[in-house]
Structure formats: structure tokens, C-alpha cells
Length: 143
Image (tube, rainbow, N blue to C red; front, side, top):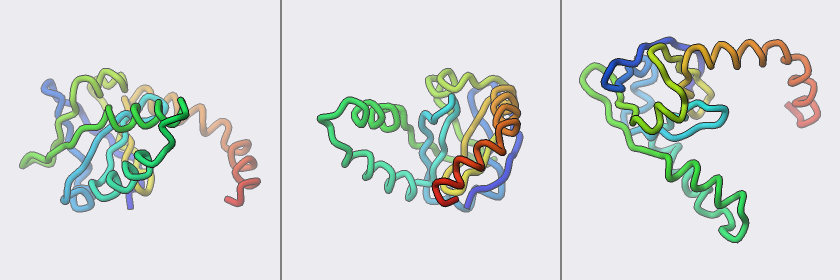
């Protein structure tokens, strides 16, 4: 399970060290793709395969499922770890998420999100201010 918040730096070649505590969960392989809210999603290969199957079963006759499948699947890239526990984030994904030098890995149970640190802090601050309203809305969903 991925939980917590971790700060790391992106090097000039587009490499970033994945938090050490998560490397074992990703040892069978990992996939990075475009995420929602202008971040990247990093999945363990097994989790990614399960999600990809679900996406592939969405109806292609409807525009929104087609668009979401394209967004997630066409933007995806397998990533490998080097000897220092780093992965290479492709330029098109760094550009999509507006990643600069300082990054945040946010653990969200079945995936990691990779954020530009400034964007993460802005998002987090805004969400924290609305946390009571969000909790109330989720209560209606049984959470």
C-alpha cells in the first residue's frame, strides 16, 4: 500500500529517486502515466494491468470513455529502476505535469502521484480548506 508524502528532486536528465520504502512494491515493474489534476500516476505493473483491462472494456461508441482511455493508455510508459532507485520520467510527461526541480510523491493506496512541489502545495492547501465540505459529501456516499 502506498501512503504518505515524500519530497525528491528531479535531476537534469529527468530522473527522480522513488521513495525507498516503495521500491519493493514496484520491483515487478512500474508504469507512469498522465494523472488527473495535472500530476502523474505511478502504478505497480500488476495494478496497472488491472486498470488497463478495465479501460479497454469501456464502450468505444461513447466519446468520454474513448477520451479517458486515450488519456490514460496513450500517455503511459513503462519505467525501470537504475542502481540508485531512480526512474526516468519522459519529457512529455514532465511537461504535462509541469514538473520542475522539486517533486512530491503522494501515496494513494494503489498508486503514487508525482507532483511539482509548488502545484502540490497549492492543491493541498486548497483541499485542506474545504476538507469539512468534502467529508460531508463523502459521508453521503457511505465513506
